[in-house]
Structures are given as structure tokens and as C-alpha cells.
Length: 343
Image 1 (cartoon, rainbow, N blue to C red):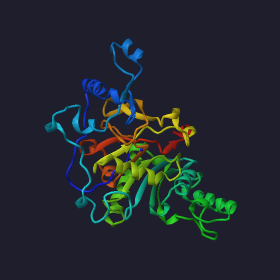
Image 2 (tube, rainbow, N blue to C red):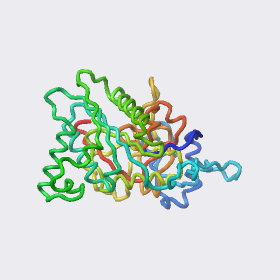
Image 3 (tube, rainbow, N blue to C red):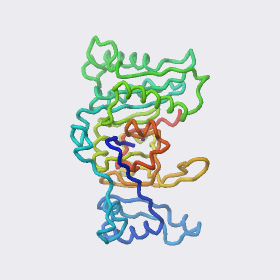
Image 4 (tube, helix red, strand yellow):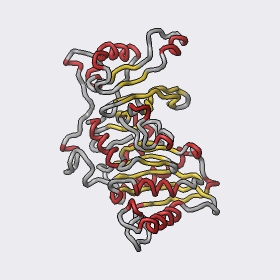
């Protein structure tokens, strides 16, 4: 998942840290280990067997390192691009008043797609400000995602007596938020993988932008069709984006399984840390480490995960160039979880 808004044409490159930098960072901040959170760099014994001595373990996270790179020279200080009033197009520089959140969700014959819609709306703090685009790749006998969602909401209203979205919407309403859900149906026989599906959604986003249905100020989130959400996940994600204090921030992490929903993992708010990649025909994530008790999103490498990414429409359309323009951040707390049985 990531998060960011688009405001201007200026760009900033994500910082790249070498192993030596990390070692220096460790030495500088060890005295305050845990004040801002910790980063697990790997099992020291495993690293030693691989030929790396005195490496691994936990190091402290210090937000200042994102501006200094460990240097004490004031001339070396360069912080990420902080949002200015001129970037916000008349809106506040924080929060999402006046902005919408667009979710992009490819679905391949997924029976959990309707439930994902139900959870994302019923657990949102501001469901009226959410728009969802589903690339539905079904066969003729598969359940339709939108229609089945509407049936689930009707059942929820019957069980609760109706009310706000968390109770299925007002009694007598046909299908709450139906007009905020846009389904692009294609035959499952024509499916060509997740990248192709997200590309089709990107085309739909481009068309919506051309019709002024999407603003450069809006948030956009890329996710899957078999997910669950923490309560008020939408507000919490926007607050985390604001904490990054970077106009070009993209928040992302490897999505944890749904059995961790509502859990404080290991009692330290542990989140997967995307920091291990390999180069094939493209850049791929090979594994993750973890971070703990982060007080704010952490600037990381140029990798983000399409299963969980909150960002703006420009990154969705031009994601192949995203790491050249935007800065990837690790979430400080997980808000969205995946059912890996259908992953």
C-alpha cells in the first residue's frame, strides 16, 4: 500500500543509503535507541555466516538522518520537499478537507471483492469522500462485485436496523455509496495479469481526470480485492502522510495477513520494512526486514508495493517513473491487511 498527493512539477529523489551509512547511523544514534523507533537489519548470526561480521540487529531510527545523512556539516543538510501553501491550490496543507480518496482495485474472479468493498466503506471515517474503481475480471457465472456488495449492505441494515454506513446505511436506502463505485468489467479470458489490470485502471483514472472527476489534490490508493481494514483507516492514512512532511511522499509496506488485524504485532507496532530488492528485468522486492514503534513514516528506498499504496493519480498513471520523482516511506502502523488464501 503508499500515500501521497501531487501538487507541482518539482521533483525530489529518494535518498539512497549504503551499508556504511547505516553503520554510521547506528553509531550516531545508538544512545537514543528507541526514542523514534527501531529498525531491524537482520539476524547477526545469519549475516556472520554469510560473511558480514558485526552487522544486523536493531538500529535506532532518527528522523534527522533523513535530512543530514549522518553528517554534522550544516551545508550537507537537505530535507525532503515540504508542502507549501502554494502547492495546496487553496486548500489546507494538511488533512483532506476538500479532497477525495480514490481506491484502485483489480479483481480476478475474487469472491472476496464484495466483502472488501463492505469493509472499506463501513470502517472508514469519511466514507462519502471515497471513490473506488474495480477492474472486474469475471466469468459469466461469477458473482458481480458491486451487486453482491449491495446485498451484503442490505443484510447489514436488516441486522442493525440501519443508520450510518457502519450499520449498512439508512433504512430504506437501496445501496449506500453505490454511485461512488465504478466497475470496469472484462472477461476473465481476456485477463493478462495484475500489471495489465492496473494499467487498465490507470486508463480509467486518466479519463476521469480529463472529466475533472479527479483533482491533483486528491489521494489515491492502490490495493487488492481481498482486504480488510482497521477502524478509521482512511483518516489514519492521511494523518501518516502529513507526518512525513514531504509533498512527494509515497507510503507503502508489505501487507500483513488478516489474522494480524487489530493486533499490536509483538507489542511494538511492528511493520514490514521494504528494504531488500533484486534486479531482474525490473526491480523486485525479494524480502523484508521490520521496523518497530516508529513515531512517523520512515524514508526508505525506492520500492513500494501495489497491494497497499496510497498516492495520487499521477503516480498511478506513471508508476514506472515513480521512484525517480517521489520519495518512498514506510508506514508507521499497518492499517490494511490481506487474505493470502486468495493472493
